[in-house]
Length: 355
Image 1 (cartoon, one colour):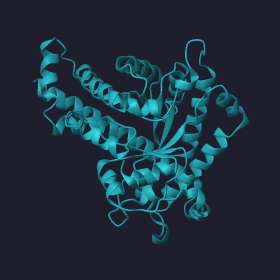
Image 2 (cartoon, helix red, strand yellow):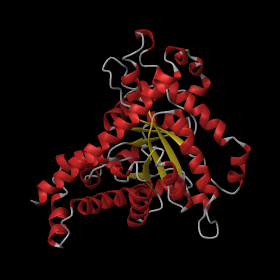
Image 3 (cartoon, one colour):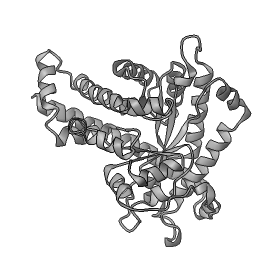
């Protein structure tokens, strides 16, 4: 194991990779990352769109699928992505078992066009879960108001959920409570509550990108970290509640906070800004490949922010709650649109390959 990732693990933080492709699986790249200490994988439409655009490793399968009579681009995409996610789940399965089913997950996202459609999201979440049929798959559900009942329903069915595109503390709290409600509705005669897990993907760098436009230089690059630390305080309050302790006693798991979008967008910021400052127990940091390389190749003295005074910063006074909420609401809508556009692009990529 890489000693730098081990340092993060020693702070009870997992490091996942925010990248997947057929090539990464075939060449053993993912296996190598796992050997370094990567213990989970996240994907999204943008990641699959880049994989389809940059690799020819999908062409043979696309040809075979069309020759078998499958010509619907979305059905073809499902076949391709389900295979990748299934293979990745099998690679991570030993970690999943070793970590008592609390790590080693691989995430796949429902169609982003369903982000405002509860019933279609539930249907697709069930379809993906059943098609992949691996205990360590997580279904990504956008943290929209329409997504909240999706989280609750999928969890109640024993389906692991990664809540994505969380920018605001309010939506994070709603997603955490939906997870708890889902656990409470599990039919324990059919589903082992110990097998059900969830992470809440709280996005970081995109907040600073927008907030930095309206604040003074002194506080730039700090508000997103402050927002994440306050979300962690929400996490502690929610999952230390006496009502949740009953679920813990029945074998239920806490929903971990996962730091997403942790590559810096401002070239003037330290490349590991959103890694060094977001170390905390029972969290995950999912990083793109460039950040992964920075982690394994740089010696850092990582320390949990719970041991620091960073959560006592004055960032709350830098930007008003209403203004921050407006920014996070807009980021959610922009995030959905970006994933929708990426999904359209990957469907077009498949159309081009089968034409």
